[in-house]
Image 1 (cartoon, rainbow, N blue to C red):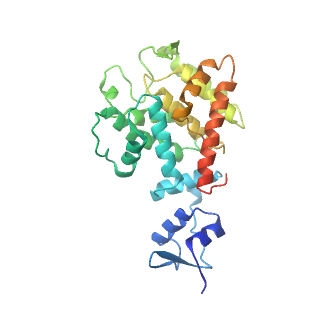
Image 2 (cartoon, rainbow, N blue to C red):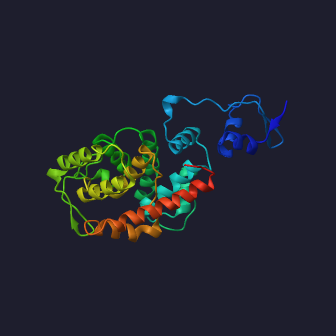
Image 3 (cartoon, rainbow, N blue to C red):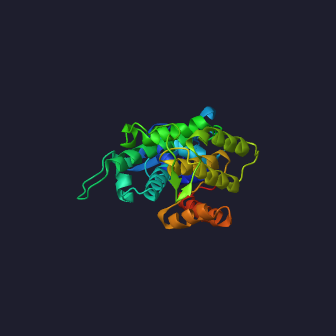
Length: 295
């Protein structure tokens, strides 16, 4: 019997080495055994079968779902959770560092710190991890008001905002609000305006990255919730990229001001926001390349 190493078996099946190691450790590759710290895999071993009901035609989504279910550390799912959560919360004023965000995800604790930390930052970080799990699970589901409200409900649950009588967790705003000094949709018009936006969006059969970015701009103009609109909006963009087999992207801190400018200048020139998002997409492509993932 001939045996392959983890790297040889991973190359044979075009699967990340971390995934193969996890398969071996959980007994999913028949006949694999350890010699010291090295896995020996029978040359004729087959890759474990995946349940077709849990996977899609999007290879990246398949990997994200698989690694989420496996609770795999150090893979693309792990990296996406930390990068998307840290950067999206940071844009909205969270003071947590990237290292603290990673610590919360990996250990469910904040670690030792001499700084005063806002409890809401910790809660919303933990909640954001759950939001990412939701958009992975429902990536191929049609984007609806229900999914949008569910994201907001998860994000803002148990925060100080949730204890305010006028704040609606998982429901549309009661009070008028502004974004960047600009007026947004009045509370009494939010539901109909958002329904119209969704109908127009879904009328497009083959959605492009530009369609998703345009939806984001219009969603932020509506600003349907009292707070949390930016994070919900960016989660929607990530979900819809996965839904339409497009490489998703994360607006990081380096792109924050370009992102803001793109939103402000959209009516005059779409290029600012589109170019910013495409730059973010290139950064995510580099992460995929690091994990030897060919999209």
